[in-house]
Image 1 (spheres, rainbow, N blue to C red):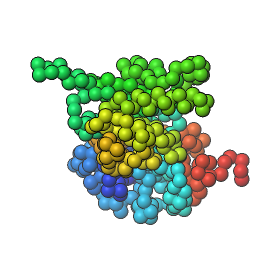
Image 2 (tube, helix red, strand yellow):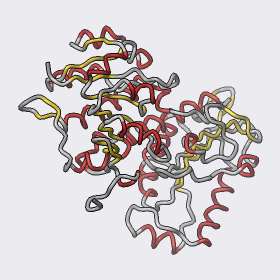
Image 3 (cartoon, rainbow, N blue to C red):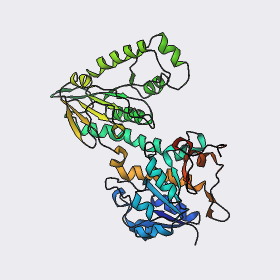
Image 4 (cartoon, one colour):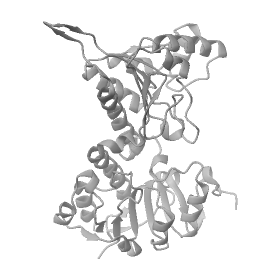
Length: 382
């Protein structure tokens, strides 16, 4: 048999996603790999063991990981899981490496070649492996669905014989992948949507989705707008004007969705209690950055909290709330990356340490932490 790939059942109880789908298992078997799926791994993503079995995977216990050459996971393995892997195994997952040096060191000590999917470079070749985008896309969609469920009114304008229901006003802060999907979803539900972003280049994308862009459009903004797609540090004076405009705008909104995250840093604070206080009765806010401390003052991880009269939704793992869709996309990201490691002739896994994707995502290898951002040696250090 070829190299063994083990699809693990997630050890953290609140993780609903799985690292493989029927489609990706079929693909891996096609590469000549022997796929073992841990019993129950796909249950929360609506994939019964029998479906994996029907296409040629074997169903095994957690102990089957001991012979695996490759372990596929959603989240970084726990200490206990690491103890069950053989030295030299390749582990691919969302590793959440920032500030978790001990956990990374433990993977190095166990001799694992570990890869962090969220460090995938944003280059054309790797677009289909970009887990941050695939999961943020779904999180943006689900944020609007959760907000609509908590909001005690209808989202679209409805003109009826009994009177008119006004459209809900939705404000999205941050027009990255999650923000743009939130805008599109709120628009589909008939809301009146506006958005803001620190990158002037986002103005066009926001407008193309039929939402209003909220920014102080003075000379400084116009100069930054022409400077390409990246956020440029604006002057203190501009920031103050922008903050005042946003505060004034939030007071008129029914629903606010925040999506601002900076990798490896605490989430920036965007919405203060004062701003929440100024919102209408029954207003709702959704914080997609809650796992990094949150953008909204008073947000509570995993809960819908009442903060100064506004219901603030702080669900962790928003994409995991639609696990069947999230798993299908995540599994596709993983198998596309894994395929780059498969030698098509010999049908075996071979790591090319010079490949730019491997260099960008590899955390540990051959007993060492190798990623320079997490204490690994840079080329030329030795």
